[in-house]
Picture 1 (cartoon, one colour):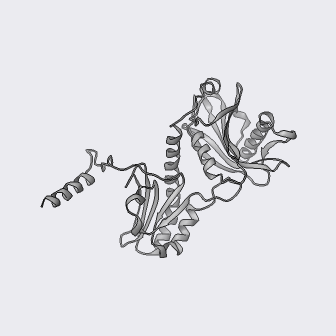
Picture 2: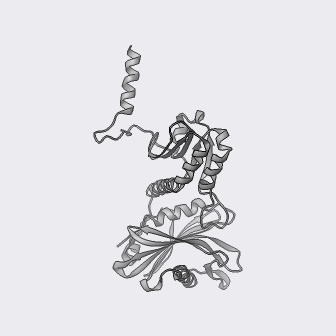
Picture 3: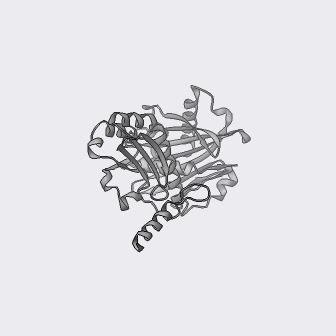
Length: 324
């Protein structure tokens, strides 16, 4: 009787709700896992069929703006029978099952914290494919938002002081202490982190609002601006030029930084005839109060190294910007 009471008490404690009606998850263990690592919990035979193909189509699709193909997420598949104990602490997971009751749920911190889990169930594989396809954008957005927050949390552990950046350009940025100031003027900042082979870089500057037009002119104007900055501020040996690669058209998206509209451009930079190239991520943030665009750009030079996670760190840094 005593052991039964103990089990009952444990169940009550672990399933109790707070006064607001939400589950009390304060007892949850800390999650783990590399950035952009995704656990997919699904039976082996379903993973090897159409459902698995659909999951890989969306979640292992090539990340935008990289010179070589790299998947959005590094996926590890495991059957439900092994998804116990330590395995439940992984920060991102997608749980897919055949069940009589159909469902699609995005849940925050179900087994650990911080954690984002997606549960998909349906009575047939065909319906699972439909549910995943119909909701893939929601899944991608939830995972992306979760990983940006986690990366920013890690960055905040050790920050570099950049008071002069705020004084000169009215921009506050959470940058890891591993970065150093490569160049700083009244209207241009260049921050760099050295890698074993190459570097990751951040540049910040401003341009008048009139320099970026509308509709079809937007991409061309952004490229023209960044190429002129590359020529004026980014020194390259033997008279080379740091420019946007012409062979591939950059990706253009609408985004938001610090509550302000921003053009997000992803593409590849190069130094002509020098066999130097890499990915860049550029935000042109519309600062209407000051009649300007603040340009925030991150780019990587890392020959023979995977660049997805390097660019993801730069994205997390740039999205931390606050603009006065």
